[in-house]
Amino acid sequence: MGLSKDYDHEKWVKLYKMAILGLERARLTGRIEDTRIEMAARMVKLREVPSLHAEEISAINKAQRILRLLESEEKRLAAEQKRRAIEEALRQVRSIAPKIQKLRS
Image (cartoon, rainbow, N blue to C red; front, side):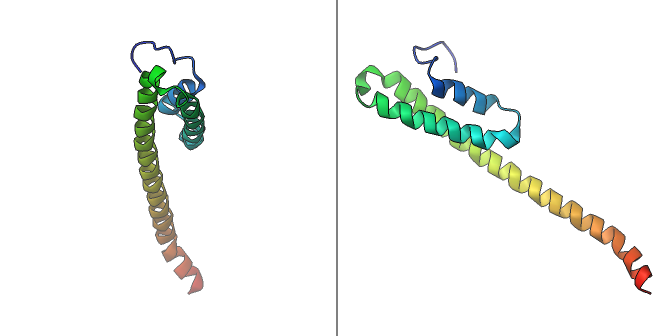
């Protein structure tokens, strides 16, 4: 995230970093959602005096775009993983098909 900012102590920043750095894919979606909720809550507070928080509002907007990209990539990877699992299951079924045919004969 670069240089330390006044808002680095905000909860959304911690959650955002956890989502970006998260290595456990199963927990990534939950982290993204938690981060979005916290960002939305923080934006409500910041809109009370937006001129005082322009830098943080900009940082949240940028982080939201990055989270959308991350989520899109996560969905793509999940679809690819599912496709591979289906292909592997089909390969295994095909490999035992001749044995099943022999049993039927």
